[in-house]
Length: 540
Ligand code: XUL
View 1: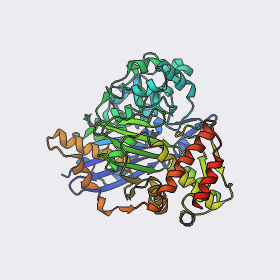
View 2: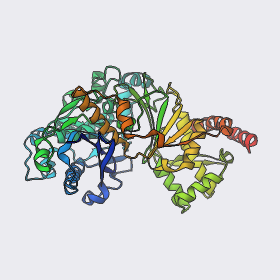
View 3: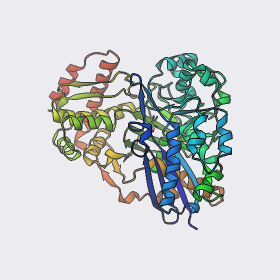
View 4: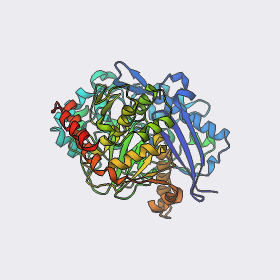
């Protein structure tokens, strides 16, 4: 019998399984269910449904359940040695909430092998859809909760983050205000992570501290539900929330339904699930100070391991609990790959051509500055999307290609300054991290080296790593995070992109200039046109 561990990732667009073999240090199987393509009857676009004016973005919890059953069917059809899996953990898109009635747990305990999960669970949702992290429709509720907690600074001190539109608390408050009866009929409110874990466990599963920190409901220091935050959010909320657990808790054995239906071992351990960002932290091997990851995907994220708690009193960055039990910082951008694609499509070019143009254009972009809010933005907060260009227009291909990439990384540099631990190295992951020219801009703007990884599916991999760690620890065969990570990730093989020292001063000035433009547009600051002309004179 091998030591196999399964990591799952229920993300915005797909459910992915990674099966890892600890002894060989290899990923022996990967399969991903695409919600749009494999479950077309839900009619999602990129895994979501957009309601109303574009600020309300939901998805279907039943679709996630269906994808889980489909995934195991496919694993069976592919003859995967499911019975050799020792432990399973998972990852969920963060912040999304799932609302369930009192039948939910009863149904889970009495699941019938002859019927699908969807048929049996269908009637357990007082709310058919789940608001997810892309939803930005709760500004009113955020203001109410923030005020109740004593303002921005007090809220951040308590919860590790500002009260944020996509976080669970404001979403729950909105549901309570708009659908009081359905709220009252809700027995338990899960996160995507704890919901999926509950299905596998056969009863309500806890929320781990990592994902719990993204709710605006958990005290960031005590790691307990915070009574003041609960009261400011909705009545009787404590009784509707699962318990909180350490990120390495074994929550029980896999439910007999999955054992009998798919051939899992009855001894398969389930480890508490977490959010995709905490899992990715481990999935890219970040367990020490001085390194951060930049993930370039649907959303671009910048995150790092923190030994101490740092807080962003500007209210844009977040602190979550890391899988190690320490802290992590996170900054999340909505204008990630979708914004890059907008430029690529506008000029009808492919990624190679995009790279060539980026390469040809000078660092500093001849003083052309873009504020790229193609979609509502989280950092800095922009609710009404609009793209601003200074010194060029939308027909300037070089200006736009370099403009979008420089804007994204200038913003990351600027908005990560609150994190007290300064990075000495960046690990780049996600789709666009395969593009060396994009990473060169990142290395130059931060003036540190960027390590390019082949690993994708970092959230699922991080979940598998947590399963490995918890399982071996529970067997008294303690393995360090280093041992586990180095068993799977070959850091030697990664490519390193070094910063070009020639541009240190230019980008230092450009970060300042970019900051002035954000202040000008978003905070009615002074028009920095003169500074921009000075920048052009100095460098071009
Ligand atoms: C993080 C966030 C996103 C989602 C995406 O705060 O909102 O990264 O977790 O899955």
